[in-house]
Length: 131
Image 1 (tube, helix red, strand yellow):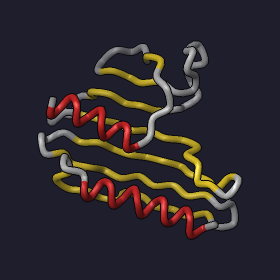
Image 2 (cartoon, rainbow, N blue to C red):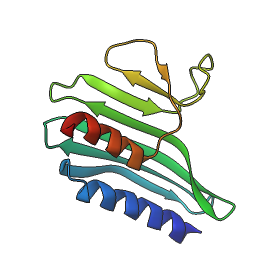
Image 3 (cartoon, helix red, strand yellow):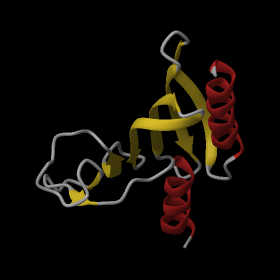
């Protein structure tokens, strides 16, 4: 089972490295918990427009499939201002998509949002940056 987690983590890193908006990538943390069949990865991506994207995922093997348990995709502009952050932290039970939500810019209140994968976040960012 650990090999499926490491395959998943390696695929995520490859996606970041080969993404057309990636200027530079750094793995900030990569931890494997083989006895629990879980792993955590945190990657920082410097984008070609000067912005950054931090990707964090905690994954587990359930029913022989890798599942994302917790995620956080934090996108900032070149000045360090939040553009969007998609996550599933369990701190907004009032939202109909709980625990999934998105923070937009400086707005304090999060917006409902369906669960997102890294691939979906890549597409959303590309659509905003490249039109």
